[in-house]
Length: 221
Ligand code: GAR
Image (cartoon, rainbow, N blue to C red; front, side, top):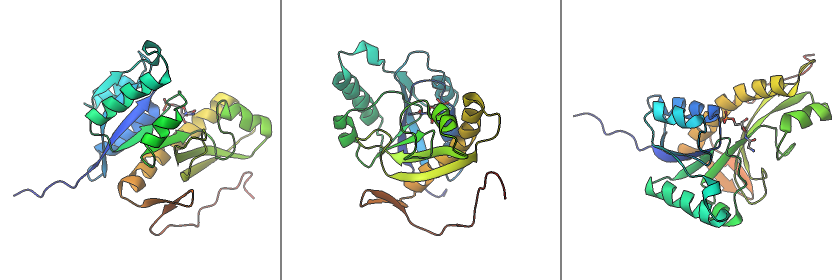
């Protein structure tokens, strides 16, 4: 008799646009033994490109257009209802460009994560690549964090850094950061799905052994 498949964490993904991070998560979940599965994808914008990635992977995808609702509470109630109908246990925001309400955060407390294109707590909010270039930082990157009421302020699960190089413009820097988002987000989802991330004292603690020998110097010395 075939061995029973290991239980996989049921994940819902919220997107607003292109969905390249969604694609990275879908690809990770398609690998044998990955401890999570995406059960539904919701876009708040009709025509969000990422919907096609979901459909191509055979994952249910729908549009819940925030503009069709009379205010944020009604929109978020519809989103939560759809996620719960699908049995979602963990919610991943992947380029979801709506600020969620305190009520929504409380409902999904400890069960909602986001990828943000900066090394938080630097550059929360929008235009992170422009602001990194304006600040003259030499390392930039991305963070995966739990979502709390403070925008981009929740406990950090993981971060990935890239160098800022001479001649960078926001688009070139964004593309370099996006490359590491696609590696970091699935890695963090795996940690959460394996039950290795614990919230304690406002921080995300990760259990297990780590290779702490990696270094990124820019300029390399
Ligand atoms: C990504 O760079 C993500 O980090 C960012 O939007 C992009 C979405 O790309 N998210 C935010 O800025 C959230 N505040 P994608 O749709 O191709 O994944």
